[in-house]
Length: 295
Ligand SMILES: O=C(O)CCC(=O)C(=O)O
Image 1 (cartoon, rainbow, N blue to C red):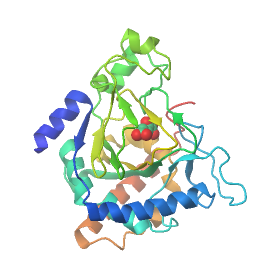
Image 2 (cartoon, rainbow, N blue to C red; image 1 turned 90 degrees about the horizontal axis):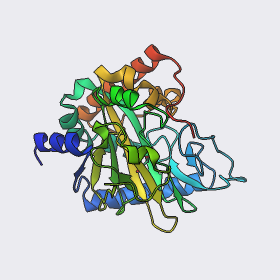
Image 3 (cartoon, helix red, strand yellow; image 1 turned 90 degrees about the vertical axis):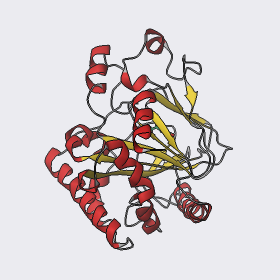
Image 4 (cartoon, protein in one colour; image 1 turned 180 degrees about the horizontal axis):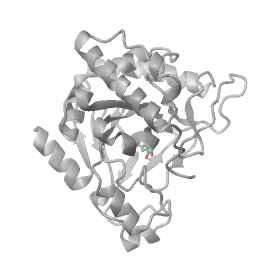
C-alpha cells in the first residue's frame, strides 16, 4: 500500500491494516519470546502486568511467585524494560523499519520527529473478559463539544497492534475518531454488543493494525483463544504535551533511561537513541499528570 493510501484509510476509518509486517521466521522467534515472558508474568515473576479485572492504568505491581495475580492477567507491560528477560528482541522489533516505516508514513515525518512511546503485550486473559467502549484519552463523561475539541487536534501518535497469532479481539466503530458520539453511542451500555456500525478488526498472524486511539473501541477476549499481540505506539515531537499523560501513565519514566539499545544496528540505534531522548525530554518537561481514564 502506498504512503498516501495508508494515510487516507487512517483518516477515513480511524484504522488501517498493514498485512504481513512479520515473516514466518520472525513470528516463530517472537512466539517463543512472548510465551516465555507471559509464563513469567502469570507466575507472578514479572511485576508489570495488566491484572484482571482492571481495564485502565494504573495496574498494581505484582511480584510474588507465592501469590501470583489472583484473577490473572491480560497484558505484560514494559517489553523494552531492561530487566525483562529477552527485552533485546522487543527493542529490535519496536525500532525496526517494519514498524517505524508505516509510523512515519502515517505521521508524515522522518526519524528525527519521532518520540519513543509504549510497547506492551496483550495476552489471552485467564477468564473471559472485555473492556468497555472507550476512547483512550477522552473520558466517557466528555460533552460532544469536548470530544470534538480533542478529536479535531492532530493525533500526533501512531498506535498499533501487531498480532503474533490470529486476533480479532479489537472492536471499533469505523469513522468515530472524527466525530462526537451519536445519540445511540451515548445511550449504549458500556459493554453493548451491538453498537451500530461496530466491527471486529480481523488480523492474521503477522498483520498489524495502526489506529487512532481515540476511535470508539473496546476489547473482547476469550480465555481459551491464544492471544499474543504486540501493542505499541510512537509519537510526533510536536504533540508531546498532548501525548504526555497517555504515555507516561504506563510508568516508563522509571526505566527508560536504562533500556538497552546495544543490540540494534547502527541506523536503528541512532533512531532509537533520538526517540528515547525525546521521551525523556517530554517526561522532564511535563512532570506528573495522573491518568487518562477512570475505571
Ligand atoms: O485489546 C486491544 O486490542 C485493545 C486494548 C485497549 O483498548 C486499551 O488498552 O485501551
